[in-house]
Image 1 (cartoon, rainbow, N blue to C red):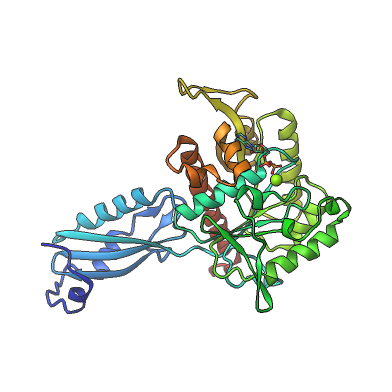
Image 2 (cartoon, rainbow, N blue to C red):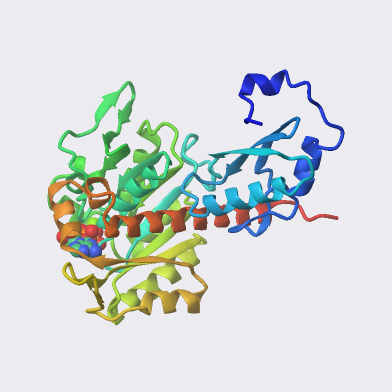
Length: 373
Ligand SMILES: Nc1ncnc2c1ncn2[C@@H]1O[C@H](COP(=O)(O)OP(=O)(O)O)[C@@H](O)[C@H]1O
Ligand SMILES: [Mg+2]
């Protein structure tokens, strides 16, 4: 029997006394969300269950379209339903409703579900490169993404994203530039070269708040914020002023960079910003002839540090000429060569980050719920 079309579900007259939507939900009771480790049914992620004769249809609502485990979830759901007596076909639709992790209402972020800061202990580790490619990777996985360049010391996101036109006013607000489906805003559009050197925390704090509130971002699942490098006053005040979902720390494998990572972790912990993960950049070099990966600066330090500190390791990106060229020419590698092995790394990274965000939001919501008496 073929799976019925939507209209046919509505007029289905082959009601069965045994195969009911309740029976389907019961059959799914042990299928967990692999990331949140709780039953999909309990999490409200199984919706719209329909039964018509031996045909079953349902929708799985994930916490992110970038879910790296969607194929696994689909297989498990289908398997569990098929095991029910009388089931002939199972039609599973997968959609996503990104959980909200913006923590307070100080700034009008109504349409923004998550603000994620990308930080690093020092400059030059590839924070902007990672922010740009990660944003595009999240969008390619189906998310609505914005990218805010708040690095007043090196606002090079416009260059990396190939944006030449500054954002235009739209009524009382500013309309972000759009590149590769990403809404982009940069402090670089508004400050003169050299001016940032004298900026202090509160000034930047005010400017970024204004940016967040006065830009017409529209609805976004993820707003990625490229923070200025370092772990000083400026970064601290910024982290406090934006109601962030959490922060991601980018590091190179060298020991010195890892010391900076520790400082970064300590800073975010002090201000209560969850750390969503560590990304290792410029980890190794993949030989273009033989495909071998050579770890010039060592490897695994960021991952070990993450383990020690209980922070997820989201993945590592090798040194690659195409990454640098992509940045210099405003054509990020994930957009320009989406099928390359490097882009695949960024896609995996995006999946891991989205998963970490869902988990962090889930833990936060659970914490805010009143205890069961
Ligand atoms: N994985 C990489 N492989 C090759 N070049 C890279 C990589 N990551 C960053 N770069 C290059 O290194 C330089 C610094 O990166 P950038 O993203 O501007 O760092 P940051 O924002 O941390 O200062 C840029 O020229 C960039 O193209
Ligand atoms: Mg930068």
